[in-house]
Length: 207
Image 1: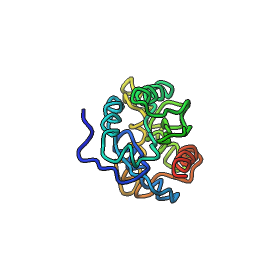
Image 2 (image 1 turned 90 degrees about the vertical axis):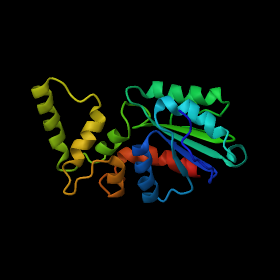
Image 3 (image 1 turned 180 degrees about the horizontal axis):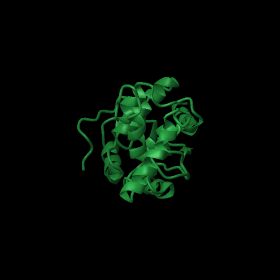
Protein backbone atom coordinates (compact mmCIF):
# COMPACT_ATOMS: atom_id res chain seq x y z
CA UNK A 1 0.00 0.00 0.00
CA UNK A 2 1.52 3.33 -1.06
CA UNK A 3 1.76 6.49 0.98
CA UNK A 4 -1.61 8.27 0.99
CA UNK A 5 -1.72 10.97 -1.66
CA UNK A 6 -1.12 13.82 -1.32
CA UNK A 7 1.39 14.29 1.49
CA UNK A 8 3.51 17.41 1.52
CA UNK A 9 6.22 18.14 4.04
CA UNK A 10 5.19 21.42 5.68
CA UNK A 11 6.98 21.17 9.03
CA UNK A 12 10.40 20.21 10.33
CA UNK A 13 8.69 17.94 12.88
CA UNK A 14 6.59 14.98 11.78
CA UNK A 15 4.30 13.01 14.09
CA UNK A 16 3.45 9.69 12.47
CA UNK A 17 0.46 7.89 13.99
CA UNK A 18 -1.03 4.45 13.53
CA UNK A 19 -4.60 5.03 12.45
CA UNK A 20 -7.10 7.86 12.41
CA UNK A 21 -8.18 7.31 16.02
CA UNK A 22 -4.69 7.93 17.37
CA UNK A 23 -4.25 10.93 15.09
CA UNK A 24 -7.51 12.49 16.28
CA UNK A 25 -6.75 11.92 19.95
CA UNK A 26 -3.23 13.35 19.75
CA UNK A 27 -4.49 16.56 18.15
CA UNK A 28 -6.63 17.64 21.13
CA UNK A 29 -4.02 16.27 23.54
CA UNK A 30 -1.29 18.47 22.03
CA UNK A 31 -3.60 21.48 22.02
CA UNK A 32 -4.54 20.88 25.64
CA UNK A 33 -0.90 20.95 26.73
CA UNK A 34 0.10 23.61 24.17
CA UNK A 35 2.53 21.29 22.40
CA UNK A 36 2.94 22.83 18.96
CA UNK A 37 4.80 22.50 15.70
CA UNK A 38 4.07 18.92 14.61
CA UNK A 39 2.74 17.88 11.25
CA UNK A 40 0.51 14.90 12.14
CA UNK A 41 0.31 12.11 9.56
CA UNK A 42 -1.65 8.85 9.68
CA UNK A 43 0.50 5.99 8.40
CA UNK A 44 -2.40 3.55 8.40
CA UNK A 45 -1.95 0.02 9.67
CA UNK A 46 1.15 -1.38 11.35
CA UNK A 47 1.76 -3.61 8.34
CA UNK A 48 2.02 -0.51 6.15
CA UNK A 49 4.63 1.26 8.25
CA UNK A 50 7.84 0.20 6.51
CA UNK A 51 6.55 1.02 3.02
CA UNK A 52 5.08 4.26 4.32
CA UNK A 53 8.42 5.33 5.81
CA UNK A 54 10.19 4.46 2.59
CA UNK A 55 7.77 6.66 0.65
CA UNK A 56 7.99 9.52 3.16
CA UNK A 57 11.80 9.64 2.98
CA UNK A 58 11.48 10.21 -0.77
CA UNK A 59 9.15 13.18 -0.43
CA UNK A 60 10.55 16.59 -1.43
CA UNK A 61 11.79 18.33 1.68
CA UNK A 62 12.25 15.29 3.91
CA UNK A 63 16.04 15.14 3.72
CA UNK A 64 16.53 18.90 3.69
CA UNK A 65 13.87 20.03 6.14
CA UNK A 66 12.75 17.35 8.60
CA UNK A 67 14.62 17.54 11.90
CA UNK A 68 12.38 15.41 14.12
CA UNK A 69 10.23 12.33 13.54
CA UNK A 70 7.89 11.01 16.23
CA UNK A 71 6.26 7.61 15.73
CA UNK A 72 3.26 6.50 17.79
CA UNK A 73 1.82 3.03 17.27
CA UNK A 74 -0.22 0.48 19.19
CA UNK A 75 1.30 -2.34 21.20
CA UNK A 76 -1.76 -4.51 20.58
CA UNK A 77 -0.68 -7.82 22.17
CA UNK A 78 3.03 -7.05 22.66
CA UNK A 79 4.77 -3.75 23.27
CA UNK A 80 8.18 -5.35 22.73
CA UNK A 81 7.20 -6.85 19.38
CA UNK A 82 5.65 -3.57 18.22
CA UNK A 83 8.79 -1.61 19.09
CA UNK A 84 11.05 -4.17 17.42
CA UNK A 85 9.00 -3.95 14.22
CA UNK A 86 9.30 -0.15 14.15
CA UNK A 87 13.01 -0.25 14.95
CA UNK A 88 13.73 -2.78 12.22
CA UNK A 89 11.80 -0.72 9.67
CA UNK A 90 13.81 2.38 10.57
CA UNK A 91 17.12 0.53 10.48
CA UNK A 92 16.33 -0.88 7.04
CA UNK A 93 16.03 2.69 5.77
CA UNK A 94 19.14 3.91 7.64
CA UNK A 95 17.01 6.17 9.81
CA UNK A 96 18.21 6.65 13.41
CA UNK A 97 16.33 4.33 15.76
CA UNK A 98 16.06 4.62 19.56
CA UNK A 99 17.12 1.65 21.65
CA UNK A 100 13.94 1.64 23.75
CA UNK A 101 10.38 2.94 23.45
CA UNK A 102 9.94 6.44 24.79
CA UNK A 103 13.52 7.39 23.97
CA UNK A 104 14.46 10.11 21.49
CA UNK A 105 17.67 9.49 19.60
CA UNK A 106 19.84 12.21 18.05
CA UNK A 107 19.74 12.60 14.29
CA UNK A 108 19.42 13.96 11.85
CA UNK A 109 16.59 13.46 12.08
CA UNK A 110 15.88 13.09 15.79
CA UNK A 111 13.60 10.07 16.14
CA UNK A 112 11.37 8.96 18.99
CA UNK A 113 9.03 5.97 19.21
CA UNK A 114 6.12 5.63 21.61
CA UNK A 115 4.23 2.35 21.90
CA UNK A 116 0.69 2.84 23.16
CA UNK A 117 -0.64 2.69 25.76
CA UNK A 118 2.43 3.10 28.02
CA UNK A 119 5.53 1.62 26.29
CA UNK A 120 5.26 -1.59 28.33
CA UNK A 121 1.79 -3.14 28.36
CA UNK A 122 -0.50 -4.40 25.65
CA UNK A 123 -3.27 -2.26 24.19
CA UNK A 124 -3.75 0.83 22.06
CA UNK A 125 -5.00 4.42 22.14
CA UNK A 126 -8.43 3.22 23.30
CA UNK A 127 -6.79 1.54 26.31
CA UNK A 128 -5.21 4.81 27.37
CA UNK A 129 -8.41 6.76 26.89
CA UNK A 130 -10.49 4.36 28.97
CA UNK A 131 -7.90 4.31 31.77
CA UNK A 132 -8.17 8.08 31.98
CA UNK A 133 -11.84 7.91 33.00
CA UNK A 134 -11.50 5.29 35.73
CA UNK A 135 -12.87 7.77 38.28
CA UNK A 136 -16.01 8.44 36.25
CA UNK A 137 -19.16 7.00 37.91
CA UNK A 138 -19.94 4.99 34.78
CA UNK A 139 -16.54 3.28 34.74
CA UNK A 140 -17.63 0.59 37.21
CA UNK A 141 -20.42 -0.37 34.82
CA UNK A 142 -17.92 -1.55 32.21
CA UNK A 143 -16.69 -4.53 34.22
CA UNK A 144 -20.25 -5.51 35.10
CA UNK A 145 -21.33 -5.26 31.47
CA UNK A 146 -18.47 -7.32 30.05
CA UNK A 147 -18.76 -9.93 32.77
CA UNK A 148 -22.40 -10.30 31.76
CA UNK A 149 -21.37 -10.63 28.12
CA UNK A 150 -18.86 -13.34 29.03
CA UNK A 151 -21.45 -15.28 31.02
CA UNK A 152 -24.18 -15.01 28.39
CA UNK A 153 -22.10 -15.47 25.23
CA UNK A 154 -19.17 -17.49 26.51
CA UNK A 155 -16.60 -15.07 25.10
CA UNK A 156 -15.62 -11.41 24.87
CA UNK A 157 -15.09 -9.20 21.82
CA UNK A 158 -11.84 -9.98 20.01
CA UNK A 159 -10.62 -6.43 20.61
CA UNK A 160 -11.59 -5.75 24.19
CA UNK A 161 -9.75 -2.40 24.20
CA UNK A 162 -11.94 -0.93 21.47
CA UNK A 163 -15.03 -2.59 22.91
CA UNK A 164 -14.51 -1.03 26.35
CA UNK A 165 -14.00 2.40 24.80
CA UNK A 166 -17.21 2.05 22.78
CA UNK A 167 -19.13 0.87 25.84
CA UNK A 168 -17.94 3.84 27.89
CA UNK A 169 -18.82 6.31 25.14
CA UNK A 170 -22.32 4.81 25.06
CA UNK A 171 -22.82 6.05 28.63
CA UNK A 172 -22.44 9.72 27.67
CA UNK A 173 -25.47 11.99 27.51
CA UNK A 174 -24.54 12.85 23.92
CA UNK A 175 -23.24 9.65 22.39
CA UNK A 176 -20.13 9.85 20.21
CA UNK A 177 -18.70 6.51 19.15
CA UNK A 178 -15.41 7.75 17.69
CA UNK A 179 -12.63 7.98 20.30
CA UNK A 180 -10.93 10.80 18.40
CA UNK A 181 -13.99 12.99 18.14
CA UNK A 182 -14.77 12.18 21.76
CA UNK A 183 -11.34 13.58 22.63
CA UNK A 184 -12.24 16.81 20.87
CA UNK A 185 -15.39 17.00 22.99
CA UNK A 186 -13.46 16.59 26.24
CA UNK A 187 -14.64 13.08 27.11
CA UNK A 188 -11.18 11.74 27.96
CA UNK A 189 -9.34 13.12 30.98
CA UNK A 190 -6.02 14.39 29.60
CA UNK A 191 -4.99 15.49 33.11
CA UNK A 192 -5.00 11.89 34.35
CA UNK A 193 -1.61 10.42 35.22
CA UNK A 194 -1.98 7.73 32.55
CA UNK A 195 -1.35 10.34 29.86
CA UNK A 196 1.83 11.67 31.51
CA UNK A 197 4.34 9.36 29.72
CA UNK A 198 2.86 10.22 26.33
CA UNK A 199 2.77 13.94 27.10
CA UNK A 200 6.39 13.83 28.33
CA UNK A 201 7.38 12.07 25.10
CA UNK A 202 5.62 14.65 22.92
CA UNK A 203 7.15 17.53 24.86
CA UNK A 204 10.57 15.99 24.37
CA UNK A 205 10.02 15.78 20.64
CA UNK A 206 8.82 19.39 20.52
CA UNK A 207 11.82 20.72 22.46
